[in-house]
Image (tube, rainbow, N blue to C red; front, side, top):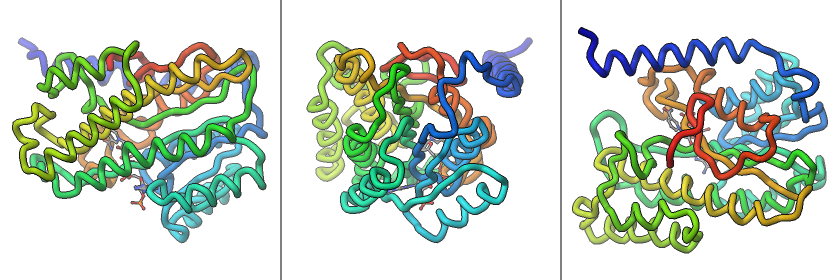
Length: 314
Ligand code: NDP
């Protein structure tokens, strides 16, 4: 008899095969809202999923800005794609550093004038396997949540207003889910606050992140009902997921023609440096849903969470 784990694996493999096929179908002229003048920015793109998203977006004909916090590594990564004939530019960007964010925005404004797509991929995680240290919690929450939020806020004024809407895509994780079979969150109060999209505010998300960090400082986090594995990372992605919904609400109030759609996705468990190359899918497959979301012809989708090109629950 086939166990439920095997069945799940079979289902996942089938979906991945379907997606590989979907990826081979070219977008029709009718679906293509973009041109070679369309500008996409990807953060943390010198390697892994970010690099792959740059490659795939450039492959679809967009102008893509590969950003990296390390100048030399980023230049080299961009060179690989430029030599392959892709329209890829490079600029340094450290999402933890406000002067780097400012400098980047200034450069974009002067060189391109606007951005159509922003993919927030940069992120850190310091736990592998069953190890669950919170030693680097500050860095994890600062980069994954506050860094992402800061670059979004700086870039919004630079996003091109167009009928199809500009797009923001946040790379998050199922580890940050609030409910469902795989959610590891036991703190009901936190769940109740973050799940109610109507009352959810940025302040609530900030408070949740700082409450977690306070418990880490006081040494009480273990009884806080936070997810038990990859705790700091899971909390950081939970915060980005919630912020995606808050921002989507805010941006959907803009008048027609000025809208920005913002969604998030989980790439799956991907063979990259972050997982010690222990994932079960390639960076190419992991990048797929992010690229698909960035290029979605349907403009009305915002404030949602996706995986394997399907909507999933927060
Ligand atoms: P990698 O570690 O390969 O890539 C992470 C990238 O983020 C690197 O380019 C890294 O730069 C960059 N980065 C880290 N901090 C900063 C910063 N302050 N400013 C700018 N860039 C920064 O991991 P992945 O490709 O796997 O991860 C990409 C995204 O996907 C992350 O957000 C991750 O959380 C998410 N994700 C990954 C999963 C997986 O299984 N791999 C699963 C679910 C989500 P540098 O090279 O300088 O360190």
